[in-house]
Image 1 (cartoon, rainbow, N blue to C red):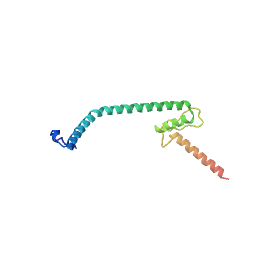
Image 2 (spheres, rainbow, N blue to C red; image 1 turned 90 degrees about the vertical axis):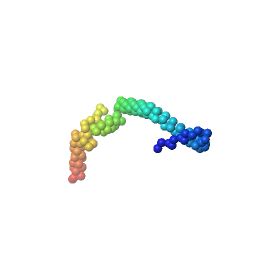
Image 3 (spheres, one colour; image 1 turned 135 degrees about the vertical axis):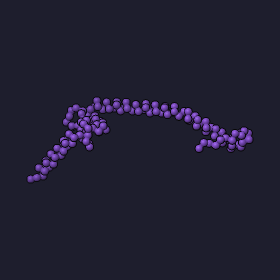
Length: 136
């Protein structure tokens, strides 16, 4: 709701409270107009700062990613697997591999079709081995 209009009477004939209310109403309109004029510029500056911050975060992430991959080891495999999972890829890696490689086939629920079948074969072999060990 817009503020009430000032009385328009000369300040000389107004009470002190009325003069203060008039001054406040005028200042409020001035603040609102200033806000309306400056808002687009402030929003543009805020968006620019946000873009700069996001770009710096992306560069820092890429530097850290390159550092981890250059170092190799389990951390690099973990990074590659995490990236594969984020992109709905399999991410399977062999423990005995020398190279840093993960499977990038599209994932079924978790692993790709090939590695799901491999897991099923290994589970079946373990069941057979337990059955042989437990049977006389």
